[in-house]
Length: 404
Image (cartoon, rainbow, N blue to C red):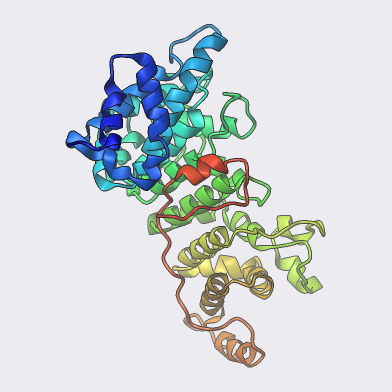
C-alpha cells in the first residue's frame, strides 16, 4: 500500500491545476528529508517537476508585461519545482536524467535569457548543479536562437556569459543577478574545451571570456561570484597549454590572483613595495583581504599551478609575489591557507638550474618560523553543488554551504 508521501507525489501530474500546485508546495520540505520519493516509478516525479517548470514559468516569448495575477499564481509553483530539483540533483540518477535531457536544457536556457523571468537565479543554480555531469560539456558548442538585446552570439555559453556580466549591474533582468553561473563556468573549465573557450577571443565580440570574469575577483564581489570565478581560474590553470595566455597580456593574471591575498594593512619595505604590481603598491588602509578561506585556497592553488614552469616562477618572483604570500600567511589563521602559502613559498625560494642561494635563505627563514614547510594543498572539487541553503541565504554573502 503506498504511503501518504507516495500518494502526494502522484498528484504532481494531476489534471487539476490547483491540486498540482498544492502538491509541489507540500512536497518541497521532503526534497531534503526524503529525496528518494521523487525517484518512484522510474523517475516519473522528475519528469513531472520538469513539466511544472516549463508550464508554470513566465512564458519565454512574452513581449508584454506579465499580469500580476498570472505572476502571483504561477511563480511559486515553478520556484517550488525548481527548488526540489536543486535539492535532489546530487543524486546521480536524477542528475543523469536532467543533464542529458536536451529539451529541458533548452527550456532552462530559454528562460534564463528571458529578461522577465522571475526565477532566473534558481534556474542558474539548477544549471550549475547539472554541470556536475560531464554531458553538460556540450553547452560549450551548443547553438540556439539569439536572445535579442542580450547577446549577438548564437552560442549558448556566450549568452550565459553575457547574462553573468550584465547581471552584476542588474542591467538585464531586474529579478536576477546570475551569480550562480560562476559555478557553471568553474565546472566547464575542468574540460579542455572549457579552458580553451575561456582563454580564446570569441568571434562575436573579439574578447577573451576569462577577462570578463576577472573583475569579479575583489572581496567586494558577492561570495558565489568570488568562489566560482576563483575555481574557474584554478581549473583553467590545470591545463598547462593555457599558462602562456594567462601570464601575458591581455590577461596578465598575476595581479588579479595576488590582490585578494593582500590587505591595506600589510607591511612592506620600500624596496618590496617597488616590486609589487601597481594595483598592490598603494592600497587604501581599509582595503580588506579576501575573507573566505575557500577562495584564498583556490587562488593559492592557481598560483602554484602557474609556477609549474620556470617562466611562471620567475614572473611571480619579479612582481614580489613572495612578499604578498608572506603577509597572507602571517594574517590568516587557517591551516589550509597557511599550508598553501608554505608550499608556494618553497617553490619560489628553491634554486633554479644554474642559481644558488634561495634555498639557503629559505632555511634561514625556517629558523625564524617563516613560511617554508613542505605540504601539498588538499584537492578541492571542481565546483560546487547548490542546495536549498543557498536559496534561503542568497542575500547573505557570508554564508557558504557544503560543497559536495
